[in-house]
Amino acid sequence: MPVTLFLALSTILAGVLLAIVGVAATGASRYQRAADLAAVSAARSMRDNHHRMFLPAVLPNGLPNPAQLSDAEYRERAEAAAREAATRNDAGEVTAIVTFPGAAFAPTRVRVELKGDLDVDGERENAEIEVHAVAEAYPAASSSAGTAPAVASGGGYSGPLAERQGEGMRPDVAQAFDAMAIAAARDGHTLAINSAFRSDAEQAALFAANPDPRMVARPGTSLHRCGTELDLGPASAYGWLAVNAQKFGFLQRYSWEAWHYGYTAGPAPCSREGNRVSADARGPDGTASGTALPSFVPARYRVPITKASARWNVPGNVLAAQLLAESNFNPHAVSPVGASGIAQFMPATAAAYGLRDPFDPDAAIDAQAHLMSDLLRQFGDVSLALAAYNAGPAPVQACSCVPSYEETQAYVARIMGLMGGVGAIAPPALEVRLVG
Image (cartoon, rainbow, N blue to C red; front, side):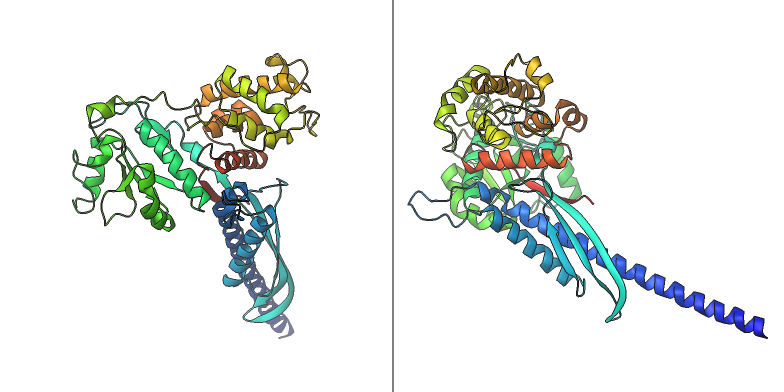
């Protein structure tokens, strides 16, 4: 009898312990989910607000720019989004610690840590809970670079295609979109291209999946085959587009499609004149290239940048934003890993480009432009070229994307944001992912 009672009590005790462990595991899983959602919410806030830090602080009329954010405001918004998400997703009474590892300015990565006592069925337990999650906003538009063909085929438009966000379109349409995207960004909207040129075969596949001509045009009839049509998003930008798109030559084609805009300021869709629109107007990075340098460039370096830009056919805006990010125009800068000078050349790369003294700013800027010219030619996309400048060509070539290195992601996002803020290019559309 004593043995039987002992075994029974042992079984009951084991069951209780397993139940406690199970409840704790379930609670920890619930808190981890809350941390994941909090991190993603913070990264979404960063994605939506990143470009606003690079807008001018003062409007042309001399008044403060309400769309511009400081770095502190940018971080505060992300922190608030994280804490709100943690509260809404049943995290209980825990402390949310939000940090931004990596970049000292314009971070694109966020870490959320939740600490507190385990909450089981509404009662606080002594067991402490500590979970964390990391998310980031990263420049993913370039990961689709090269997916659009160089020349249209398959029915309709048959001329050269310019690529934006992985979608092809007529070159004049691309330039007009650049100008419109820059204006939209200044008003707080980042335009995304969901669809552009489509061949008759692609249209046939869409129609087969949804054979309703009220929703999808029949093959051979869609204006998307002409390279002049853009399906734009997100929905939050529809109001802005309705008011402003016509200023840039775009017309909302159908009253029931708030996203569909066609370009009407150039040759008619699917016309002979449209087929002859030149692709030469594009810069070597595939974007509209302005000639005026941003106001943040010190007077001492305006002539060297202009000369290097002309010599190596690299937009001066790209070189200027890169130098600001690399060294803040400090010709004596030295990084912890040994990169030197205003353009932060590593010794091996400096030797490869004939740069004897990386602390000579004029020579370094010329070598920087030479290197960027080679990278733009190799990758055909400014984001990828910048990533290769920072991380080396090999990891960029391996994935045809901006590698998932924390430093490189932030580097590319910051420079693209700088160029968008000064009207050199449209700011990149950032995407969000959970990374840890």
